[in-house]
Amino acid sequence: MRRFSSIALGIAMTLAMSSMAHAQGKDTGFVQGYPTPPKTTELMDDLLYQRAVQAYLWALPALNMEAMKEGSERVFGKGYNVLPIFKERLNAKTLVTTPNSDVIYAMGYADLAETGPLVIEVPPGLQGILDDFYQRPVCMEKAVDGKRACGDVGLPGPDKGKGGKYLVLPPDYSGSVPEQGYYTYRSRTYGLFIFWRGFFKDPKDLDPPVQVMEQTRIYPLGKESTAKPMVFPDASSRPANMLYPRDGSAFDMLARYIDHEYVDPQDMEMRGVLATLGIVKGQPFKPDDHLRQILDRGARRAVEMSRALAFETPEQAPAQRYYPDRKWMNPFPDNAQFSAASYNEIDARTKFFALAYSTSPGMAINMENVGAKYPFTAWDVNGQTLSGDKTYRLHLPKGIPAALFWSVTAYDSVTASGLDNGQPFPSLNQMDKPATNADGSTDVWFAPKRPKDAANWIRTVPGKGYFVLLRLYGPTKAFFDKSWVPGDFEPQG
Figure (cartoon, rainbow, N blue to C red):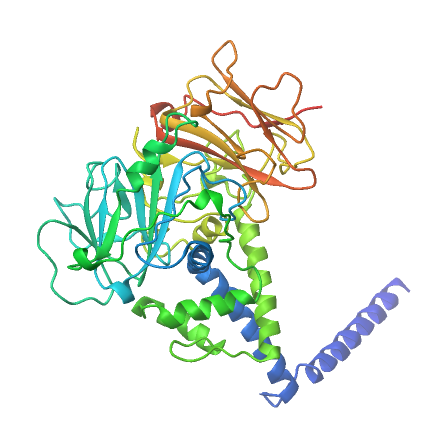
């Protein structure tokens, strides 16, 4: 009886599977190998959606930079001679990804297609970065003493903080170039990002770094005497939204970028993908309602994917952990170009530009007292994401390994801009002279209300998540040999 039942069950299952396979065959949307019109429409829509997602992720560095440029120009004006300076530091009202509120910023945007070769007179004592509009460090045209400097200007650059004239060539420039008197670079895009950082010793005296930045001169090569006069708007007094779009409007911005930019031979495949979405250099971008809906879905999905990558937990991305028993992560791979021996680190690039902007070798280099390190965390000691509803203590042992200065800053988990918490700045830095414990260590409290006896407090916002950057400018040996290890966020109560 059992044997008969087993056989009967087997036959029944075989018949059922055969029936299902037959039914599936009818419903595949293919007839004798040819897709039906409805199936073709379904597949083409899916193809456009997939291409929209991947195009957005590929273009994220450019979208981030283009949004910064357009946002800045709406408020401060346009031109190679316009260099907005955050003269009172950058507060949370300015919306831009992971800014540093503990230095003085200047951020300018030049168009090499308009200016041709551009001279940038860098004053002494500056620290800055030159990036193209895909946020790649701009590199020297030729190696000097066997080295080809990229990106870094001033203290970490070839002028070593003494100042000098930097000449940046457009990507397609083939004219003559002065042989002496300049550090000559070539950009891979027409767009050029000019990013200065100045350090202050006293938060109540910000004039010295501002005065250094205001010595900057920018003008087309050979036109110094006829160049537009420099303008240095105070960007601290006028908030700007410089965040990249997180919906279908990103493709309108990308179309503007593609239409104006140099056609890099390395981008031909991705430009081909963009062409299928209607984005072609020299042609108007006019998606119909159906395509615009697909692009909107693709952009929103890409943003979600970028956030999933950016906030991979320490357990999901063990190679990024600075310490095996801590939640602090390294935002960079081995270099600022996000490149490996035989491929580009596209996920690492997406992670970074989802939350930040600008790169240079000085940000990724591992040398004592040089550049900076940026450990970040979004998790408490128990692996839970940081919540604005809770109270945490961050313990920093004595001897924080920063030759120049250190700071901790809280960022909005959605926009990655400074956490708008009602305080002047969502950060605490060494120049604030924070209170220390008897053993020389420092405790920083993160909470919606100041905890009792908490001298060092960064306010959080109930109902809002956040992440934190620990900046170490001029990291010392104790950082690299891990003899100094920061604590994790410890929830209280």
